[in-house]
Image (cartoon, rainbow, N blue to C red):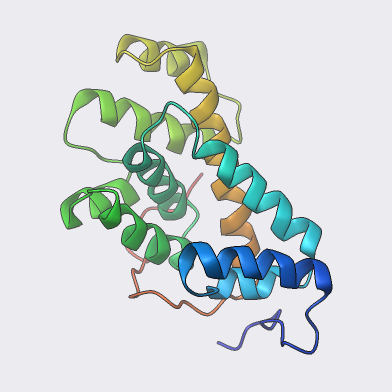
Length: 185
């Protein structure tokens, strides 16, 4: 599939986007396709980077944030995000089994299972969770801070899932297909 919103060319890059790209290049060593595409709107790219940067300071570990990202990518059938977060998740210490399970909102221990189930529920119910959904998080040992942060990480990943669906972003990571994951309600 050809991207519906193409990657920005150097000639099209605004000074604001160029500055953001410089920071990304220094941090990541390259500019990945989602950012090359999001670069058409420097305010949108900057908002994403600021939100993502803030969540990197959360009490959730990098691995926990990646598990949430994978659960959301699986629910929303975003192959770009599934591919990217599988790679990033491995860098955060997740195994192949962990990343594949998370796409289906599954985990190997009860506390993490509560987290990925909650993330999937927030996504699938578009935030309209029940008292029992929140209680399940608390019963598993998660506090109010982590519940709020989990909602924020879900929201951040819904944005990238939707963005990649609209743009048709070309996957520039080893492909992870979400075709076998049950669709969100």
